[in-house]
Image (cartoon, rainbow, N blue to C red; front, side):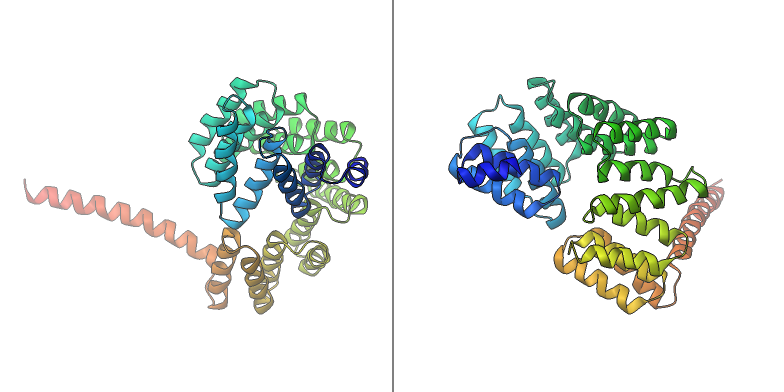
Length: 340
């Protein structure tokens, strides 16, 4: 609210706009954040401060839309302005990641860290890249450094997720509890603790506790997307598809986004409400034409509607692949035998 007051007092002040854009980004208000950053860039096109945050926003938008041209332009502009600033190479790294070149993205984030070893955002982005490359142990180191430099929710979220991926449940629980203590028990931190208790290794009792935590998070912040999706997942896992769909439909009244539509489509397909499920996937693709999860959900749904069990079909394909391998070995042996 302080930055909003400053923005009202000094309209179009670049510093106020940049900080307000960063606040909106942290609260997942992407449209408002983009508007602030664009205004700031118009007022001062040579500014590099906070452009790493703007690059993170553009990366999020590029991943959902499949269009990275604006992020590419931003990265090019920042390198042209000053190639010795870490923000420039962080933007390049995010553009390459959005374009599918994760190894090159890692190379450029290393450049950013050489220029500024204490750049928390560069450590966090490095952790996210390593996590996407299924290197959770390396990601843990980066996320740990990021949260030590700045105690922000996304760094804690990355650290907890990496610990869980590495099978370190105890460490994940400690980090989630630390996030709650450091961040004042905000909704996002409460969700992290719930995610640890809801993991595969925990008991049914722990999962019930997780439901309580996700519900508490929604009480603290009724717009928390992670709390909605996690609570819906737990209801769905226990076969309570009606309650899961209620949570998601309530969420869609606040956020008309592809993630929630896809999740609702999944839940409705499990409940065998195929026509409603199909509509949810169509809506998700209308909002985000490049949404792979929506495409995969539709493909799975089409098989179900034809009476094919997609999970069983995948198992059969694996078996057929093994049989093909065995038969080719037999053919090779017979062929060899003919020349003896």
